[in-house]
Image (cartoon, rainbow, N blue to C red; front, top):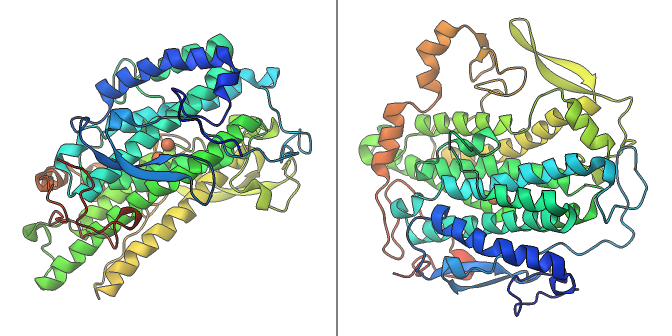
Length: 471
Ligand SMILES: [Fe+2]
Ligand SMILES: [Fe+2]
């Protein structure tokens, strides 16, 4: 296995020192990245010692090292999963041919676009979350958000490596542009909608990590199937880090749910807000919001782009290798939820153009498993309340449901009903102001804000009262 050379300016397992041109391109980009981190990374805390994990190899058994670091000193590097000898393209027209080690000329533009779109989400989420440090509910959570932030920074490096290594001058220009767009900026926004939304409080952050980072997991998993081998290997290692981001999201929401239940039990009532917790109906509204904006990230239900990516061997299905069909899908069909007059109906569509919807289905099933675990917490407290995912047609801005109003339970409704009821379904100004009012920093080791339960265990075997971020 190629080790990671920490003596180099940019830690990597891609033999960077053997490619002077690429090394110079990345060394030229590195100070620009650091300037971006300074301007748009976490506000404050940059001179603090944070207990972070750093990727030191791609070995499944021990790829991370834990220790105190100041965030600007994090070793953002380039790590690809180990090559698979004799790897073949697993789907589409090129199925069975050797995976590409260079970009196939006819797919250059498309592949670049896929990489840039993925890459753009990474710095975007850091920008969205940059103000949250000062309202952290504990040092444990503060450390976790910073861990997510530095790794999203590394994911940007991962995509910039591909652009610089394989796309020449166009790639270098895209690498610059990735540092110039800004989340939520009117003139130069990030590419995808969910990455221009605000993440104003920690409930939103945990929801984002659960729903939106999980979209990342599904996009990365389908790019990990790519016939373009460097992209596949890059994404496979990113998925290793991504798992922690979803853990932060799921456990964060779960701890807020648990605290709501504890407050309901202790005080024999459900006025959780009066007791300083987030009530379950408010949590449901945040689910409705974050789930729906994340569903949009999968694109249109019926998409010739998706079909072309697949046929060309660029982007596969989730767990392509585990599916036992012909992996070409020319004659197959797939059931797709579509708008049929005044209602939502499921129709069989050609499988190739339905690939976005299929990935969305895999994603929804994964989200549902997390929601089930939250409901277990509620049930365990003997409380009759069930959290649910909103219907996939609810509050959509992309695809066939973008132009209709749909209730969270999937009824197509008129504008009048929407106007009357949307503030029951999505966080309204009062909800947001209430959640914001809870955002008071807690920075004593081992202490947690009243609205969130402590986690089951600390990070890397450390106790809960460990100094995860030093003063
Ligand atoms: Fe990421
Ligand atoms: Fe992530």
